[in-house]
Image 1 (cartoon, rainbow, N blue to C red):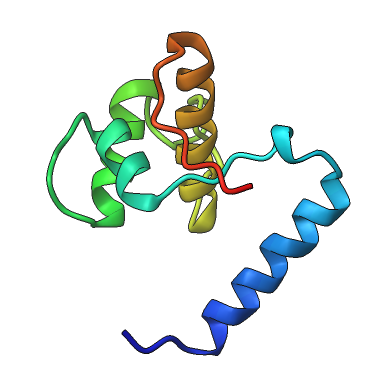
Image 2 (image 1 turned 180 degrees about the horizontal axis):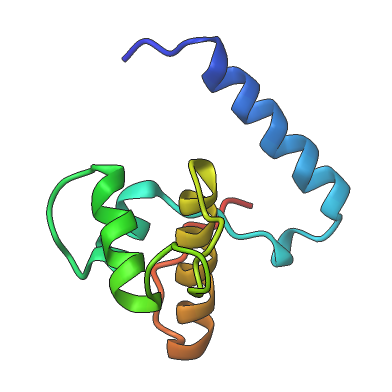
Length: 100
């Protein structure tokens, strides 16, 4: 599989974050399919719209006065990662994809 420049830039960014954070045991890396499966309840597919719809069902609309007000573009992905991480901390049974 061929990779592009953005893949290498992402790898570099991850390495810099890990170095800045300091302790490896505080770093957790998650795969997109794992997060997608958790957030959508196992619905097959890979569309961002599935993530958005599932988060809206869970937390409400993203309209003014609603809990997700102001969530747009990449913030949906960040919210999905945060929800996955916090759910895993509560359930204690998340498939962590740690890299040491």
